[in-house]
Image (cartoon, rainbow, N blue to C red; front, side, top):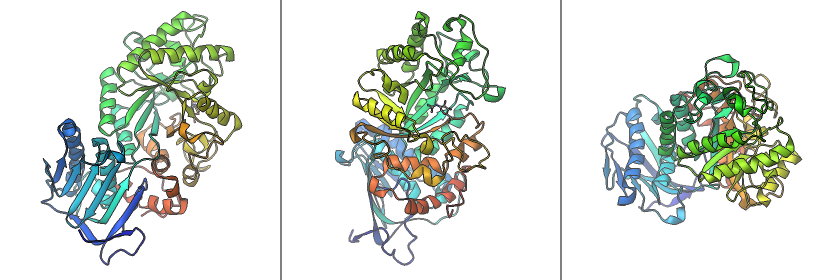
Length: 510
Ligand code: TNX
């Protein structure tokens, strides 16, 4: 094709729609002047791949086809070989596993990657290039145009996560899937599930059945809780994997354990089981560090949870152990970490675990608020060779209120506006934290005050896409004024997807 790529921002050809605003912003994008792709009723989706990746690459094409069939009503058959839209795994390995190139011109759209995962990242971009109504669940009128463009893209960080607290309030498999779907649209690749806490134990453990049957029975406020059976959890893991998110299960220890302590009296130092807890305090419970049964218990739990986890990371919590004597904490964490590695997984834990020696390959999750102690813990983790995932509570905690009148959420880490949550650079957040120790970013969503999906979406949108951009896009792309404009363009997309997002007044939603 003869068209010369022009830098985006140059005048689009007359008649061509303006280039849509992509989140996360790609590494590089150029306009193809005067070219417009139009999806037609006779368009096809082709897949060019090798035998090893055939199934996965076809599944990505099927995912794209399924969504576009819903909104366009076109048949869009998926077939081997070139199509109107062609997904190819022939891309250079220099793109990395998640990188892709995309070209849309008058004759078609090519998405090229080295892996099916890269194709999946590419189709999330393709969806955002189409009009917002392409994301609708029901048939919409066309035209289905994309202004000519070339994109080359790959992530800044390998770890780009979302966390959902299913303990304080339980969310059904369908609700969890919906959150995974929305996270996947912004190229997040880790789904951290906070599966146990004082208020509820949410994952089946065959060797300790009362954890769920009793310990999972309630939630905050005293309403019925729930738990995931092994089949449920397998379904979540499978669903996430199809969207190229790895599930990281968290069993919080030694604090945040009232649900387990209530389920088994033997786990308590005094042998007395406390009642179930449905309030929202933290820091009052602890496993009994001196008892052997504590480690028999954790060995069983980490074994069963690891067996259900294809990813290589299990999170052991470790936060806010205010009821665990400090010397006990220092004894406990290495023992618990050893049980995670015994079952073949890398250890992840909240920043406090950096006070203890950690096994090779561990990840510490920073949740500080620019305080010196949290920063010191992040550096301590790095100094012993661990990686750090950044979840600064005053920026990345999606449960913090946007402003003082936000109807739910907490504010212990401050009010977190859309601008505040976006306006930071992972490289420089923690002074003197070596860049090569930063694995990436994660946005946790704690659910003390969030008992349904509408509330979850209200808190996550529009802030989650901003954290996703901080994890994916190069530092040079991060800029609030232009981000704010791109974010405005997501509003109609969330309307099409029926996302209950917060219409922050500082954004000119369109
Ligand atoms: C702190 S930060 C917690 C959670 C709460 C959250 C609420 C951290 C690792 N733990 O137990 O749910 O604040 O914002």
